Length: 251
Length: 193
Image (cartoon, rainbow over all chains, first blue to last red; front, side):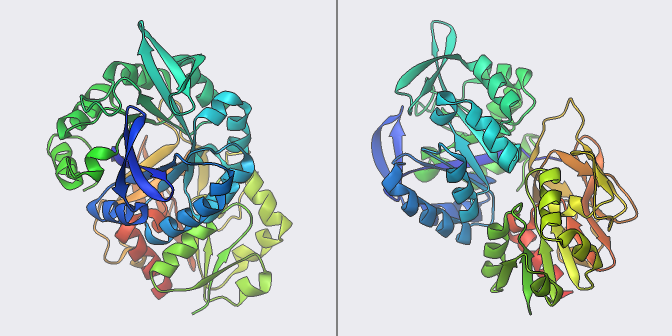
């Protein structure tokens, strides 16, 4: 049976893991390679590294960091942050990344999704979508939640699937960092409208939130960051509880 | 032991090389026919689209060489699928080592099949020390049917071939290089054969 995936997200800034609350107030959370190795040993199913400092000068350093992660880690991992060209993706995959995640660059130029999917296959293209519920409408944002776009969540999600995304990582900006649980209604709608895997992101505060998101929305994976970094939720206990409550999971 | 990872511009060769390095083994990544012919073990990875990958193999004349290899060969993911009879992906003929056919996972399922799924029926020496129903990491949109070459099955929309063997050729649909300790054990078993 295919297991539901638990994913740890590591935001990287200047080579360190950091965590912000609702896209700001950054605090340090440790060395990414050490954290990743530790999570892998604890049974995390997948890792996502988002380099939030991404800029031209940082690119070479980033490839080096990705190589160091790939040397140590024997589970799949995804890399994101400032990726905007076929060449960037080729370099990251060559450095050992399994998948890449694209957000703003896809909104700026949607054809990028088609180009990447044709070149590398849709299995390695994860489209990250940040959206905020405003007056009953899920509005898509870009540039790390700083700029509102004209896209509504469902329209953009269907668009990226048609263009060749292999997976969608949806972050509810309303829920992110609040630890009150995932945004279940939006996830139910995404699951009903799409045929590619959906990763739920934003809002996990305790083990019950994971159980709830899998049971109520049937998402394929759920992601969290700070609650793992600061050991508020034990990955082992989380997976055991999910397993004991009938959710297919790799122990 | 000389281990070669075939490079034909369609593989996650680096991930496989790092996995071998974690096991204390060195491997060369090459498309050179002489290097491949004189290797003790050959790993044939692959990601992306079948048609483009097959065109790349032909460009390096590896489509003729690979099926003739006498040493242990391990195809991974698309590498395994290219070793089969034919594939629905681009409607192309495969290298014909395994008698299986490759079809698309039908509509109504979440595609790609992404994540950790269980393998069963693992009696082959490739799986020595691997427990029944162990989880392996998969990511694919096409699958191999069951045949006499099947040495492990996985259930998704229906049971399909998770691993294949014929003579000196092995194939894994999952990624042993990304499947934690059990995946590493499978790579080790392959090298030990």
